[in-house]
Amino acid sequence: MRYELLKLMDGREVFSGGVAGRKLLTALIDTTPPLKEPTACFLDFQGVKVATSSFLREAIIGFRDYARRSLANVYPVAANPDPAVLEELEFFLQARNDVFWVCDVDAHGQASGARLVGDLDPAQRSTFETICELGSVTAPELAARFPDQRIGPTAWNNRLSSLAAKGLVIERKAGKTKSFSPVLETA
Image (cartoon, rainbow, N blue to C red; front, side):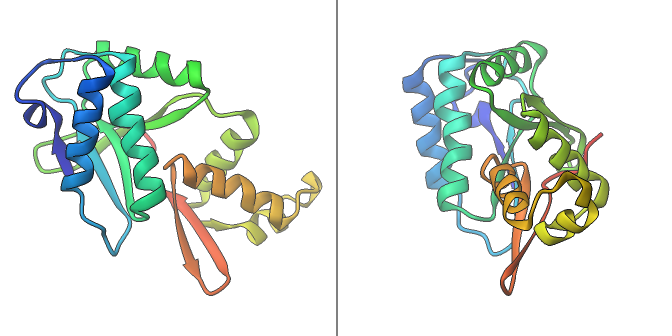
């Protein structure tokens, strides 16, 4: 799934202000159907020269938060941001102690250069890195893999659920057990 933000914003290359951000948020919500399978939703910034923090807060983070609450299988990712847009996004996320997926997407929808921008606390960072290394994990698997850390399955599940709430990992249920895998492969 891919949204060309420049088209949704009527070709304007400067995205500024909370009002404009809420307008884009509304368009994204109206356009995004519920999905049966976990899917990365590329918010394509191709051609956008500037995006202010207030715009990013309302549109991009707002859509991520909405998707995580209401569209369980939609995982927003910022794609093809101009260096100025990326700098503003990173500055905004660091100020909030938040994080977001960023990547490049080609004309065929293939993602490359996937990475996180923003901040994760050290416990979340190490958990995320372990998920990326293993590909898919459950809380009991992490508790068994790292017995010296004396972290039980419930605490591991809390860490994993926190990463899922940020849209960084996909949460799948199989019976009573949840497995978690990265939304994208990291570069």
